[in-house]
Image (cartoon, rainbow, N blue to C red; front, side):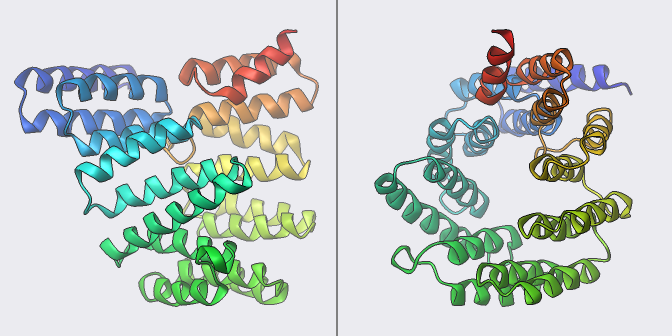
Amino acid sequence: MGRVMKKKLIFALVFYFALLGSGTAAEAADVAAQSLLSAGRVDVAISDLRSHLKTAPQDARAYHLLCRAYYHVQQWDEAIAAGQKAVELEPGNSEYHLWLGRAYGQKAERASWFAAIGLAKKVRREFEQAVHLDQSSVSARSDLAQFYAEAPGFLGGGKDKARTQAQQIAALDSAAGLQIGAMVAEKENNFPAAENQYRSAIKASGNQAGYWLDLASFYRRRGRFDQMEDAIRQASSAEVRRGDMYLDAAQLLYRAGRNFPAAVQLLRTYLASDTKSEDAPAFQAHYLLGSILEKQGDRQGAVEEYRAALALAREFDSARQALERLSR
């Protein structure tokens, strides 16, 4: 079945179940919204979720998906408001607390020092609650470990706490536990240990691309760019690759100012593929591609990519500002 027909079927199902007014309607709307987020069509997802919530104001899952949609377009206040509503309606859901914590964290990174302190406390509260509610959630434990590794002691942080989380994660997923251990070692400036653990995580994962990119990120931070590029090549040839690998790899090359042609190829491959994921929204891939083309002097190509990003996410300020800059 073609993509257009699939999209039509999704919308037909949403409409049909909305007419029924049953509990199944919420499930259909949630499935449709998640499909839209995975495809990067965030504007449609937000519109559909907001319309759905007018008739189903107690649908916690819809608020949660709305939180994620706003998160991806960097609308932190809206993401927090939706996330708070999801948690209020369903306080026992670990995933809802995790995403609310992430939204608080992103806002904290851009807030004043005083405001960031209050937000950081909320981040820790939500992450700890997420772990409390689902002891087996590697995602929740990983986010909590990163908070512990980065936050000062007066905000509840601590490298010892992060190492404890790494040990608990290792019991659930050995590769993820090693990756967190590597992150902690790097925060402690123990770079040889960090590198060894990043490599051990690759081996434990069965050579998955994501763990090669963790090593590539480490090399970028250390200024070891040739090794970074080699790790990216290893990621590109790994058997287990998620769609977000392409965007993450291109982002690393862009930040390092290295091999822009390879970064362009990675992004074009991703945008032409059927492996798009919510973790790598298509509008962000278009924006990054536009940024690289602009660096290469391809002004018209950059404009086209910024417009493509805004066609999917009109509230994405980074793309709008870039387009306005090139239009002057």
